[in-house]
Image (cartoon, rainbow, N blue to C red; front, side):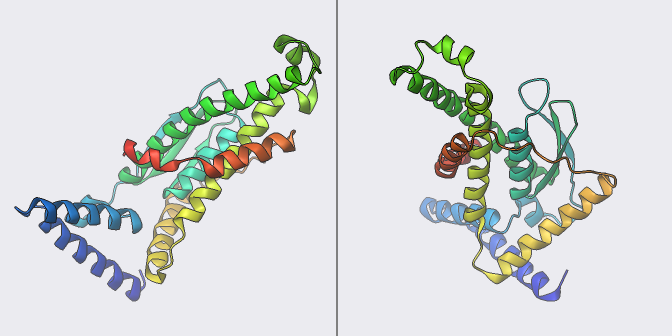
Length: 245
């Protein structure tokens, strides 16, 4: 670890330790303010209370994460992979299955998995609305008589299933874009510490999966649906996921 980054990390840890001591204050307001500041710093610098209170080897386990259906879809691969990386973890998927293996520090794994649970639940709800709106558009404009007919008569990129999968690809991309922008760190030392944690995970992952290969994603079939999904994902209220931590 570069000396400058190590010194900065020590300074941050010392500050958090001081704040932790203040959380035991008999002054309830002072204790609450200190606790809030502790959580803010832990998140900003990707640290845990365990790392602050203890000085020992860090556990970096792997957990299995299952998605709906028998085989994971491209949008799920994109979402799980990107969100895991944004939250200081890494993931791989088994070809022809619905299981992902997510690796990271315990605290980061907990946040990543809870975030993914929240996102999959929200996307399931939102894509249902989007698909229904798409189908209803054909009926309301008098192009097709009924919902059943829409599914029977439309083919290729215009089929509701193609609209659904393209919408989900766009939404996944929009969510990750939003997370990337939110993660932007103006402080140089903060960026250095984040880079250090990213490099740590790259090294661990390379050791776990030395023969890992990348599988290219399929092309988006409905660009309009992708664009609509992207906007939805970019604007999704990710603050709700904090309640899950």
